[in-house]
Length: 306
Ligand SMILES: [Zn+2]
Image (tube, rainbow, N blue to C red; front, top):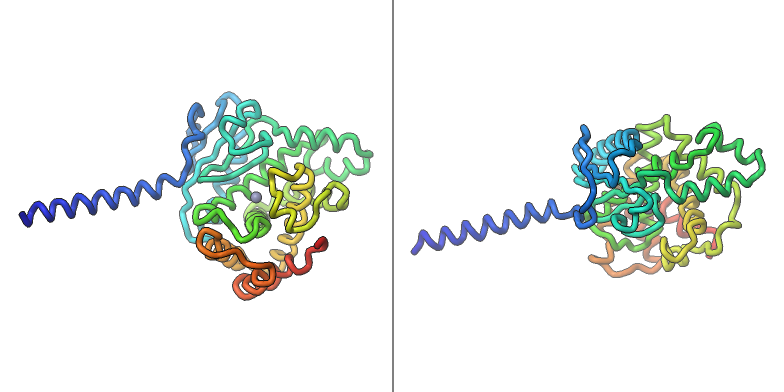
């Protein structure tokens, strides 16, 4: 009798442990992987492509791996994730949302374009209608043909990877702009510290957009950003917000250490709306000042458009 109770207990315990272990693995959403081809790489994360005859992934993967090592060390973890490279025409089948080719991340996946992204194609078309003096700002960095995938894919893939480091612990931040700032701060920090040859690829296009002013943005308040976010803003308007955050991230990190990344990530996780109630703007300002840094709270206070 005693023996059977013990056997049952052990069985329950084993069952519990295996659920826990499975729980750790199941963070990666594999439902979007079906039909993709696995690439053999030297890296620890899984890489899947929608077409293995298109060879455009080597440099991106190398950078992502370097970024993983950098973020793992800062956030003291060993993040498991998968990288997907998807052709534009298959985008809707495997990605969580449009537009085709624009990097995105969620549920343990970083999803990137495999062929030239629709966003790059459209922006390049607009840029080539501008006077030569504007093109001259971009050509030395992105080449004579101004290949903006060097920005949209090579740079933004790092921003997306950084998102996974907080998404793993919670996906309902107090504010969307805070999670975007976190991903951009992380990207900026990595490229500045560890991938300096890519610095101009990250910096030149945002500077170009920032210099062109606020005309492209219909909406400009942080409240609008929260309410509309990716799906209800035009791509240009969404980009405008991201560039404002980029400019702030740059100022913050040029005078701060990576400590601020750790604090901001902890803040995102600890105040996730799945655990806490929503803060008012004044509460948020106070908490950010106390728990992360005044320079982060100042973004909210000093945002030009109210
Ligand atoms: Zn983002």
